[in-house]
Length: 210
Image 1 (cartoon, rainbow, N blue to C red):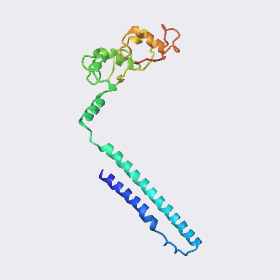
Image 2 (image 1 turned 180 degrees about the vertical axis):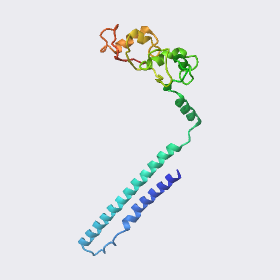
Image 3 (image 1 turned 90 degrees about the vertical axis):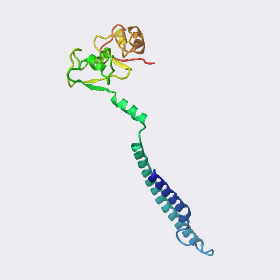
Image 4 (image 1 turned 60 degrees about the vertical axis):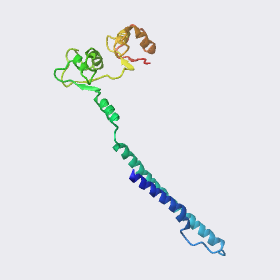
């Protein structure tokens, strides 16, 4: 902040110089009985000098503006975090979007980890499974070192997997948790679905959300 004030003072000094000093520098004004040519030459030189000083002033202001921008950026980076901001940041960083399987892990156990879905939420293991079906051949067998996506938001799109139907997709916890709401998916994807009882695997469906 101190440096910023110094720069602002510099700008004020430059403006004062440009307004009050530049106009009086240069050649001495010709006497009243001087010829028209002498007056023209005098004013042309004055104009050229003023333009030169104005350009210098403009360059200096641009330089100072750059310095102010740099200082502002630095101030944003070093400002103190408020306690509530730190707490929120820590919570955000703790929310895992990826998880690397460790020895002794299984899907329902993962789901109960505090940093995943929390104690008592073992029943959410299918959410993890469905998000990582390309890596899991057997729901009872996962291996150390495997990296799984951990869904955090309700999906707005869904790629149909082999054997899935609209009612089955609708019944998933992360979709509508109700097989009866399959029509919502159908209505939003009519152009892709010729028969609501048969949906081709690989079809990307839009999942309507409020």
